[in-house]
Image (tube, rainbow, N blue to C red):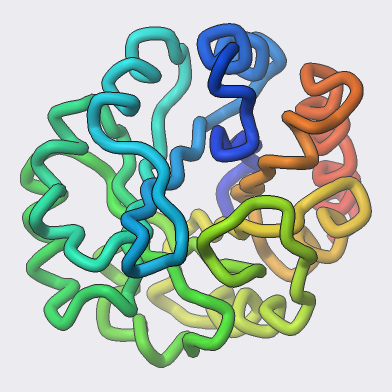
Length: 223
């Protein structure tokens, strides 16, 4: 069963000089999750935030935090990010040789666990752990930078996931989501919409949260 539509603003595109205001704005606008991208300059060619920023966001956010670890050694930093206030930990399958151990460890710390796939990574890479995770996050751009164009070929992976008996109820998509791309994304089976530039770079970011949900729900009704 597919879960309801969830809007997850990505703070990578927020104005960090006004971060508290940006967080409170999207939370009040109805965001379901806040998406935080953690990059190490090694797994992806960019460096972003660490546990101290997650801790600060936790203090002002009224919704759960999904911390997306785009890092080479997620095991090393798992405890720190959970302690900082993560509600979800999403790791990349490409970064771990023993993902089951990581999932078990994360769940023992009381968080939900997601697994993310780069655009070129196949669903076969996560088949064995599908029954263990709470979310599959399909990247529709190469991870590392915001503002990239959507790659529609990844939609086939969502359809493949939805046909799997062990697929979790939540499938997210991250990269290039906006009012134009959300309809096809939802039709494919995605219910967690991670949007950065579309929200925070909009003329009215608060209204954009509602517009994205409205467009998504129209497609849910038509399915």
